[in-house]
Amino acid sequence: MSYIKNKTSEKELINWLKLNHMNLLKIGLPDEILSDRHRWNYLLDHGYDIDSGWDFEQLVIAETKVFLTLVGEQFPLDRWAYMEDLRRTVSGV
Image (cartoon, rainbow, N blue to C red):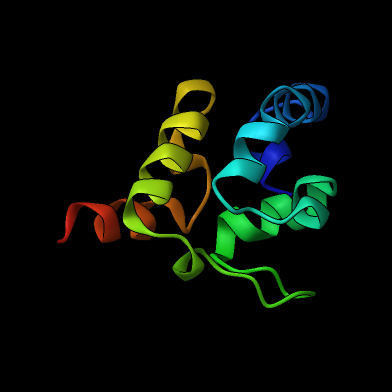
């Protein structure tokens, strides 16, 4: 699990998701992913949700920037494999 190998406690992750749930919903992330820490970590590692097929390409650039800001304020983005790809997408590189 990403949150274990990167020393983010499960409790810290769950609390952060609860605090940011509405903001993440507003930018388009599905509730079923936000409500399941395993699906959340999979999304951040791989860029899509295996159960629903949802991926970050469904967000516009402005929404993606908000997402990266929200997550980046609490966690180093390099904790998850896909976040570097997402940052490149936003920067146009």
